[in-house]
Length: 201
Figure (cartoon, rainbow, N blue to C red):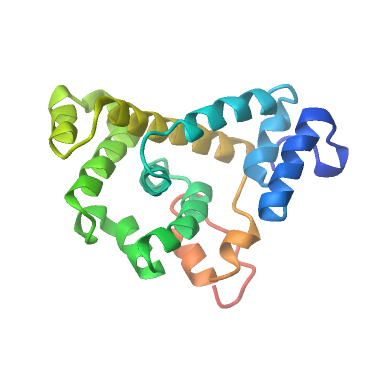
C-alpha cells in the first residue's frame, strides 16, 4: 500500500468488524478493504453503500462478475481483472474460457445477450459520453429492462471508480488469487504488472 492504512491488528469498532468478515470469508483482509481506511471514517460508509448496490443488483452475480471483468480490462486494473478472472472460472467453466472472454468477448462463444451487456459495459468504461439511446434500445431488444440497464451502468461505473482508487493508493491482488495458477493469474494482469515471485509464472 502506498498510503498509511489501519492494519488488521490495530483495527477497532466497525473497521475491526469488517476486517473480521473478510477473514471469515477469505482467510485474510483484502487490500481492497483495507485501502479505504486511508480515510479512517470512510470504510463503513463505503461498505454500506457498496453492499446496498451489490445486494440489490437485479441481474445474476455471474453478470456482475462479467461486467466487472470487462470494465477492469478497460481501466485497466490488474487487481480487479485478476480477482474477477479467478471468480469467473467457475461461472464460465474453464480458465481457457475466461482468457477468451478477456481477449475478445464478442467472439468467445457467449450469448448475444451477454455480448450486448458487455459491449455496453465496455463503452461505459471507455467513453460513456458516446452512449446514445440507440445503445439502450439495443439492450432492450435482447431483453434487458430499464432497471437492469441502469444496474449494468452502475456496476461498470463503480468498477471504474474503485479500480482507479485501488491503483492510486497501491492496493493490489493478494497471493491467494494468483498462487493457485500463476500463469493464469499473470495472464489476467491488464494494467500494473504483478510481482513475479514464482519462477513458473
